[in-house]
Amino acid sequence: MIKSTNPTYSGHVLVPSPSEIVFSIPLLVDLISSYLSPHDCYSCSLVSRDFYGAFFPYIFSTIDLRTQMAFHKWARPETQIKLWTQLSAVRSVVSTFGDTYHFLTLPALFSDSEFHRLSVLRCHLLPTVSSNYSENRLWNQFYLPSVLLLIERSPNLKVLDLSFFNLDNNDYSQRLLSEIRKKGRKLQEFQVGESVIVKSGNLPSILCSCAAVQNLKLDIILDGFEHGNITSDEMELEVMARQALFGCVDAHDDGAKGPRLEFAWREFHVPSISYNFELEVVFKMLRHCPRLERLTVPGIVELEPMEGLSSMLLTSSFPRLQHLNLERVDAYTEFINVPTIFTVFLSLKSVVFGSLRNPIDSIDSLLTGSSHSLESVTLVVSTEIKGECIQMILCSCPQLKIFDALGTLGKDLEMRNITEINGFRYWSPVLEVQNLSFSESGDVGWVCHNLEVLRLNFQSHDRTLCIPVSLRQQISKLTKLKELRLHCVAERDEILEPESVHDALLEWRSLSDLRILELRKLGPLVDRNELDRIQQQWTKLEWIQFN
Image (cartoon, rainbow, N blue to C red; front, side):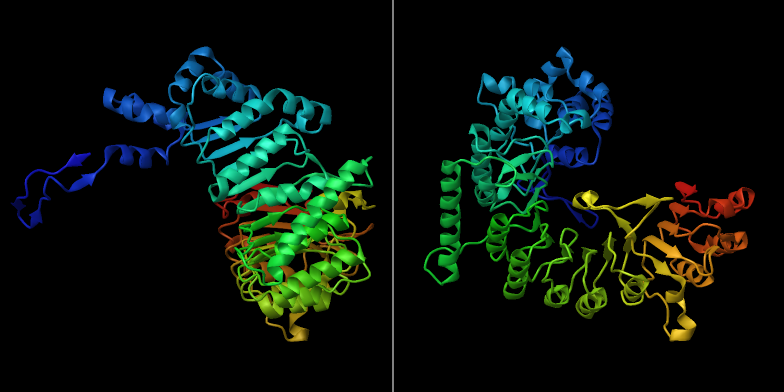
């Protein structure tokens, strides 16, 4: 600590007394190092001996081993010895190599040392490993003890990302879930990758163990009754877990005495749930999540769970919910009342949807409550959403910053029979030129002047390959645009109109913040020499593509 001298006056400045602390050098170094990379900290440590003592420990604050070169650098014996003397300085570990956790936890095997500052732990898999379940099991066998030891010796862990952890009912998973329960609200984010297979009966205990986690993301593969042989003992355990969970929840629903059951989830992302039992469990739990801000609705394809979803959303209170993802909901169920669901939320900031039986009514309900708060809208593959729906959104949301209507495929939608021809996916939303006739309809045009990302499929008229005048005029008004991706839906034997692209590029010179430009199917209309001259106006442009 640096303290002042005796209180004296120097001009108009009063020097504090010795008991008053001016600042702390360790805290100052800690604050400075949080904005520096490990290489920058190493450079600072070479300035002087004092700087070496202050900045050298922060070289080991971030261990990022996602490449073979980085791993070999940290795996050197001399580097490991230095690391073992600075374990208390480690704050973040991101690695795809299992041996990382071996040499990190080796000192902990022979002592009670702890990683007090470790707050972020992300154990990822290499692509060649994550796609192979047998290799995945080898990871669990050889590296899980070290990973679990690292988790147990990190009392201040805030972010835990395990893309390979086997959450089946075994000793390792029980140790992990027990540690998650111990950490309580200190653990803010828990994420498991999609390569993990979980038995149906284990889901309730996993979710209950993560009750205090704020951001829960489980991209897991559920192994239910339809996929495997379940024994009578496993069936009995599942029924008991179901009764215990629902008994606890229902008791509080009926006004029973005792502490109120409440889950701390702010983000709930478990999209692969599709069986009625798991959905029933999830809906029961979501009724007790008053802090929920982000919700990814699980994949629903049957009548009964869809009714449960509607009932849960209509009867529960989600005052903080701002981000709703309905990508996994299938519109081809007998009962789906998305317009009613949208009326519950009055200030959504982002929404993802696509499969809507009655899209006009659904979008109208969405805009009624959230038109002035929506900042991001994403439309996935859908046969129902037409150009009129796209136009409704762009003409009603003044705060919109991201609009993606390219029809990006969801993970569970890849199983559908969707063909792609010339870069265009059938079932994708398409804005047609007749939807842009503002002069005839009396509309004022797009009101989303804060739009930064626009991804759009459009189709011209009369079998012409061009950029419609009305479309390019509306885009030219989006002066804050940073990313523009336009995919032209064309047929065979189109009539080429090169001047339309030339005029559009000239008109879009006002988009000074443009960084990404992509024009699909319009490559034959682009004059390369003219493009080079126009491109000089876009000083921030990073990537451009025509095909």
